[in-house]
Length: 182
Image 1 (cartoon, rainbow, N blue to C red):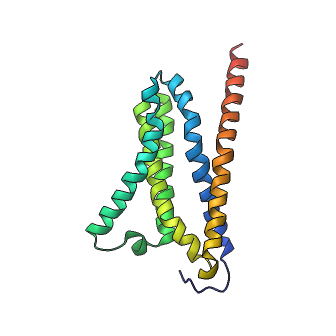
Image 2 (image 1 turned 30 degrees about the vertical axis):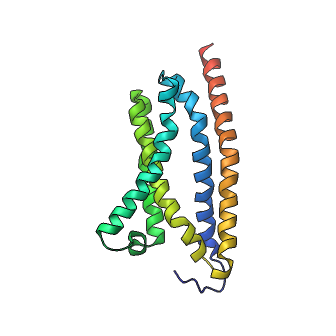
């Protein structure tokens, strides 16, 4: 990707910023899920905190895996496979983690649910490693910090409204379940 472009590539930047939004949305919504998981899986307070731990530890583990793979292959993995492919790989990893939620819910398996959260976090780790330099590379270098600031602001917007939307959805689902049972 050339950093000497005349103008910002908005067709690629807008989907990237959307990903920034969802990182904030999902990360902030994890804490809303703690009491839901605590009740659904009959967890202690300590066990319920594993929800946050599994997700955020995955960031560190993902970074260490990336560093180890780059060290073992004697080259930067992201530069080898490219920004877009790295971002797509991170999204795929997160999607696989998300798909684990379905069998985890059907089997009432908290360890499987934690595994899904961990894998989502691994995908986020790779996505966030590549997203900042990609945001800068999608236009002139002189306005790269502005694109990065915009993306960060949209991430914060997702962080702000994510818990509100998830809380509302949980409230509506509870209401519907009560109405159906009565």
